[in-house]
Image 1 (spheres, one colour):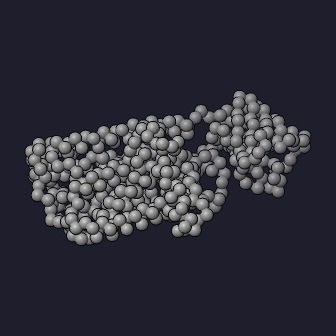
Image 2: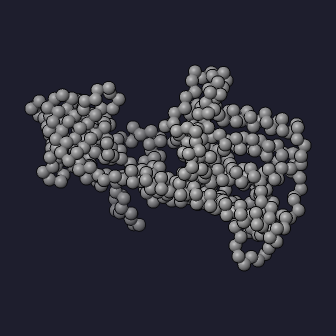
Image 3: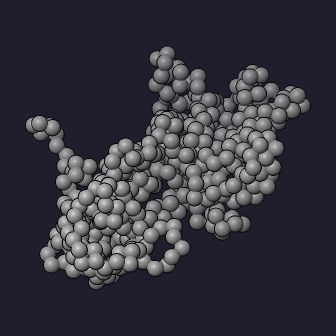
Amino acid sequence: MLRTSSPIQTLPDLTGDHPPSGPDDPDPAPPAPWNPFTRIAFRFCFLYFGLYCLLYPQLLTDLTGWLGSLVSPLDDPSTWQLRMLQPALEWVGRHVFGATEVPLATTGGRDQLIYWVLLFCLLLIGLVGTAVWTLLDRRAEYRRLAGWFFLFIRLCVAGAMMNYGLAKLIPTQMPAPPLHTLLTPYGDFTPLDVLWNQVGVSMPYQVLLGTAEVLGGVLLLVPRTRVAGALLVMVDMAMVFVLDLCFDVHVRTLSGHLLLMSLVLLAPEARRLADVLLLDRPAGVSTAPYPFHTRRSRRIGATAQVLLGIWITTAFLPASLDYWREQHPPKSPVHGIWTVTEFTRNGVGIPPLTTDRNRWRRLVFDEPGWATYQRMDDSLIEVRATISQSRIELFALGGTDSSPLASFTYHRTVADLLRLEGTLQGHPVTLTLERIDENRYPLRDSTFEWIEPPGS
């Protein structure tokens, strides 16, 4: 088991692995000089991952909290570094990779070409910088510099874990599948859709995933528990990285680097972890570099890190709650999945033939401002919708015509029956619809049973 420098401690100490015995006593004698491989590996990690945390979008922004939008010189605080570097990255993209353009889409993922060009530049700087540093510097170790480096990347990883974890702890990252998903054939889903719906269909599962990520971030922010935090983050991000690879989620560069940085954080503890986990031997006192060298400075540093965690939480938690409320607004008067039982066009009843592309089979109202109609061939068409107490207007997407695709007045004689009268593509129509019970779909049946029902 892991032991500390003293066999008995009456009070827990969160400041570090081996606090000095007195209020201002220095650390114990430093360990032996680093071997050449350790020095070279540190130089590369310092350059590559240090620049990555400084220049890759989001990581610094996660730490700035409420100040992110104020300190950023641009409108989008999460990508201001890329926008400042964009001319240089575009030059590299054209002359090295032969790309005609290297755009930055703020609505896309983190695997756009410009991100890969940035990683190429960071890798090149890391390799060349390490070579030059090795030739010019003959110092035996960099413990003081390493202490600040490990602290910096540990805080960056913790901020990212708090960000992503709170988005699942308050389940907003992967919302419950919308109603039109119930009508979509499984074969029409992309791998990303499958993953998102699989997580979103179970709120407890998503909350547990978020809890693990938040816990990893919290443990990283407390110096005493930083090793446990790095281990948990390693497991979390290994799973996320595999999911991103297998389900084509375009944040693979970020999840992969968070995994790598958790391994970098664990590297100074590798021997102790191997002793405990693999060799069944007691671990010695940690000799990992730490930037604070007196008990007082350690306490101040630990307090500052905990306060930073509170600061990050106060920024992300209200935003997640606001987004949760946006995802769960009051339902419209016609919310639900409606089957068209009668369809009259120009006064003539239209039979439900699968070859008729003008007749509708179903109409779905779910998210505010949107609707989906299903044709007789089962194709689903998403449209914008405005719904009042008596009228419904539907607008086609991507068109330049501002006139509505359909305009109806609606009547509900009973709860599960709806009658629409108006125009569709310029033709007078009348539709009679019957509401489908959403819970008849197995995907919406959230009943939990310990005993397997017969015939299931």
